[in-house]
Image (cartoon, rainbow, N blue to C red; front, side):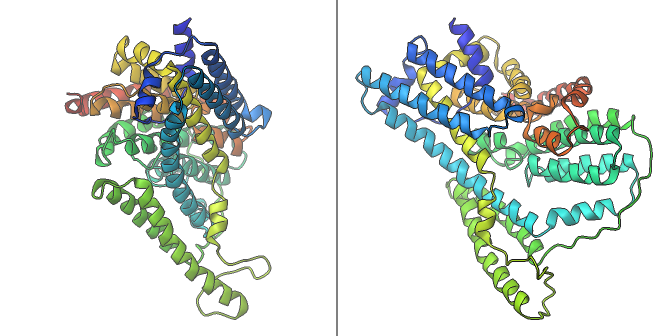
Length: 474
C-alpha cells in the first residue's frame, strides 16, 4: 500500500526545495505519518485537485483554484494532527519555510512577467513577427527560422512566451495549411523547451534549481549542446516532410513604440543584476529582479510623461499614438497583467506538497526512485513523468526529496525535466498554450504522431550530456 502511495505522490507531487530547519520541523519530517487517516485524506485531496488541473481545458476551471483549496485543507489536517501529537508550533514553523520559498519565486517571476508584458505593450514581439512575415520566406525556411528563434529566445524570455510568438508567425504565414502549422508548432515546442533547459531564466524548473543553489549560474550552459541536439534531431527529420512552397508575403508593418528597445536593454540589465546579486553578494536572485523592476519603474515614468505630452500637443518626439484609444504607458497595468493564475497555482502546488512532505510521502518516493533505481535512471524517469504531469511539480518534488547527487546528476534532471515535456503536447506550458492558439490545427494527436522522433532527440540529449559532461558526475 505504501509503495502505491509513493508512486501516486511521484506522479502528482511537487514542492519547494527547502523546509524549515528547526527542531520541530525536523521531527515532523522524520516522522512517518503516511499511514494515518489524515495522511490518506491529504494525499487523496491533492490527487483530486491535480486531476482537475489536468482537466482544465475541458472543465474551464482555472488551475489555481483547486490547488489553492487543497493547500489550505492539507495544512489544516497537518496542524490538527501535530496538535494531537503534542507538537505545538511544528506546522507553523514548517509552513513558513514553504512560504519563504514561494515568496522568492513570486517576486522573481512577477518582475520577469512585468518586463515581458511591457515589451509586448511596446510592440516588441509584434514588430518581430511583422518583419518575419513580410520577408517572403519559403515554408521550409520559416520552419527552421521559427524553431531556431524559439531555441535562442526562450533562454532569455521564457518558453511559453516564445512559443506563442513563434506560433503566431507560423499561423500568419501558413494561412490554412494545417499540416504545416501542426509540424511547425511541434518544432517550436521542442525548440522552446530545449532552449529553456540550459538557462536559469528559460523555465520555472531551471529557475528553481538555480535558486536552490544546486547548480551555479554558469554551470547551466554545460547543457547547451545536449539541448541543441534535443531540438536538432527531431527538426532535421521533420523538415524532410515539408515542401518548398512559397507563401504570399505580407505587407503589414508594425513599429516598436517609444522606449521599447530601451526596455529590452533594461531587461538584460536586470538579468545581470539578478545574477550579480546571487554570485557576488550572496543575496537572493529575486532581490536583484526587484531592483530591476525599479529600473523599469523609473523609465516608465519618463515614457508616461512623454506620451501624455504627445496626446496633448503635436510632438516632434516621433511617438506614434492612436489619439482615439491610446493611453500613456502605466507600469502597474503591466504588473496587473502578470499571469496571476499561474503564480497562484505555484503557491497551491508548493504548499500542497510541502504538506505531503511533512506527512512523509516524499521520503518514500525518494527511497523508491533514487535508492532502488539509482540517480541516472531516476532522473530519466523524471523527464518521462514531466510529459504526463508537467515538469514544474515533478521538479519541486525532486528538490524537496533532495537526493545526494553530483552536479552532473542535478544537470541531468534539469535537462530531462525541461525537455521531457516535449514528448507530449500536454507536457509543457508551451505545448498547452499553442494547442489553444492553434486550435484544431496543432492537437494532441498531431504531436503524438511525432513522439518517437522527439523521443530519439530526448535519448540523444541524455547520451550527449553523459559523454560531454562526464567530469561533472565524479
